[in-house]
Structure formats: C-alpha cells, structure tokens
Length: 114
Length: 109
Image 1 (cartoon, each protein chain N blue to C red):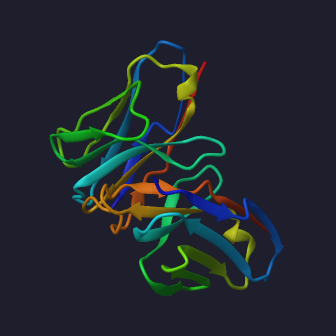
Image 2 (cartoon, rainbow over the protein chains, first blue to last red):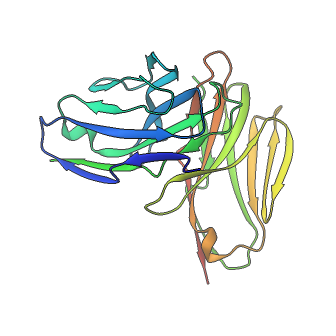
C-alpha cells in the first residue's frame, strides 16, 4: 500500500510556464483534495473532488485546474505559472468527504516560480 | 468561518520534558485532527477526535468541546519528536478542514 503518492517532489518553473502536479492514491478513497502551504499560514484548500468526474473549487482556486477521470488520480494543473504560486503543495485523500474522516497526505511538492 | 489558533508558535525543550501544544477554535466542529510534519517531509495524521481523550504511545490528545479547545501532549520527549504539529478542524455544513498555522517543536538532546 503506497498511500498517497505525489510527483514531482521539487520543481522550478519560469513565469508563464504550465505544468501538472500528479497525485495518486491506492486506497479507493472517494475524496481527494489539493492544498497549498505558505509560510505563516495554515494549509489552504485549492480544489477538491468527491468522486470520479466530480470536482469543485476550494478557498484559493484561481490559476489552477483539476480533473478526476479515475478514482485513483487527481492531477493539479498550473495554467500559466506566477511567482505567487510558489508554495508547497499537498494532495490528501480520505475514504469519504467530511471532517470526521481520517486524512492521508502525500509527501508534498515544493514548487518555485521564477 | 472557523478560526483556528495554535499556541505556542515555537517551542524548544530539553529531551525528556513534558510537552503541551494547544489549539483553540471559534465555531463548533465535527472533529479535530492533530497532524505532524517533519522538516522537508510530508504530513502524517496523529489523531482524530470529537470528544474526550486519545492516547498513542507517548502522545496524548484531549478535547474540550464546551471550551472549544484541544491539547496535544508528548511525554518523555525525544529529539525525533522535533517537527511541526498542526491542528485542523472539520467544519459542520461544508465538511471542509480549517488548519492552524502549526507549532514548531524542537527537542534538544
């Protein structure tokens, strides 16, 4: 059981470039989410999905896109990278949506936009 | 929106000391989570609780629903406990999580 796997672990981009952060889980979890972690702030929700084919916006969705074609995968796309998107990104999953669900996190992707 | 506050922001202690990290929130919740983040690493869930107390090894988590307050205790602290500890609450209604900013714990040998 690998849990939640994120790739890459590190990435440096130039302003305007696009890229996709990958997230996969092998626990058959319905709920998957993307967070960003910035210094001095709590994790903030970017996008989430309650099942294959269903996605919705979180607190800070601008500049990001997601899709959920399978239960296992939930990629996060940066459409045109900006320095303000420099952050550490975490993917998380839980069996179902809800604050009472144990959360499983990936190891994070450290992204720098120059 | 729920406001989650953790204290202290930073804590340095000697090995063996008893550690307490606090978390307060402003609005009623469905559950509270304690998470651990090691330097350069991922986030691991330590506890999820909605009432009372839970214990796992040297870690103990308590919650007082009436006071809207939770504590994470570490007994006989060890340098490997050095990490950032994050409190998160599940919100009624939208069921999303609101995160605190974390407490950075350093245990000196």
